[in-house]
Image 1 (tube, rainbow, N blue to C red):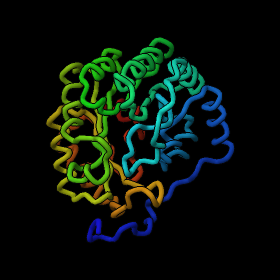
Image 2 (cartoon, rainbow, N blue to C red):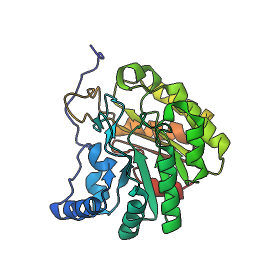
Image 3 (cartoon, rainbow, N blue to C red):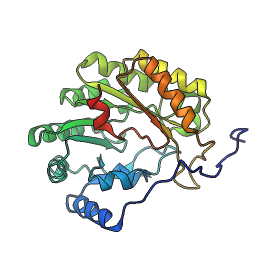
Length: 289
C-alpha cells in the first residue's frame, strides 16, 4: 500500500480547466511545427496549456522530446534521444519574435547521454534569444549529474532566471525520481547563486503525491538556506494509469498555508496553487522581485 489515504480520489471542483479551442490550438501548433519546436506544455500534458496557448505563450522544450531518465510522475517520453538540433537556437528566436514574448522559459529533457548534459546548447539558446530579441530568458535545467562545469556554462550565458526543480520531498525520491538526488539538486541551486549572484534561482515542488505538510515546510527551509529566490508549489496530476498515483488533492486552504509559510521565509517570489507549475506566470513572478 502506498499510503493510508485514498489513492486516486475523484477530482474536486477546483481542478477544472478549459482546453484550448481548436482555432487557438491550430494557430500555436502551426507555428511550433513550422519552426520544429517542442513545448513541455504538450509533452508533459500540462493542464494549463489552454490558458497559455490562448495567451500565445509556451514553455519551450529543447534537446529533443526523449528523456534519458524515467521519473514516475512525468509524461515525457523515455528512451534513446535524437541528435541535438543545431538550428534550434535560431528557431527559438523566430518563435519569440512571432509570439512577441517578453519573457521566455526554456527547459529540456534530461540528456545524460551528452558529455555536458546539454549545457552548451542551453547557453547557445540563451545567447541567441538575448542577441536576437529584447526578451528575458528563464531556463529550467536538469541536474547535469552534479557537473559544475556544465552549470558554469549555462550561467556564463547570463539567463535572468535559472530554475531547477526539486520536484518532490526527499523521502519520496526513491519511489518517484529516476537517477535524481535531493542533496545534489540543493547543491546545484546553492552553487548557482554563489557562482552568479545576479542570476535569480528558482525551484518547484509537486504536492498530493504522498508528502506530509511538514515535509513541504522543511523543503522550503532547505531551498531558502541555499539562496533560492523563487518558489512554486502545485498539485501533482497523474498523466496516465502507468504513472505514480495521486494520493490526495490538496485543498486551496492548504496551498494558502504554503504561501504564507513561504512568504514568512522571505522568498523573492512565491506561487502556490492547484494549477501552479514551475513556469506558470513566470514573467509575472520575475517582475515582482
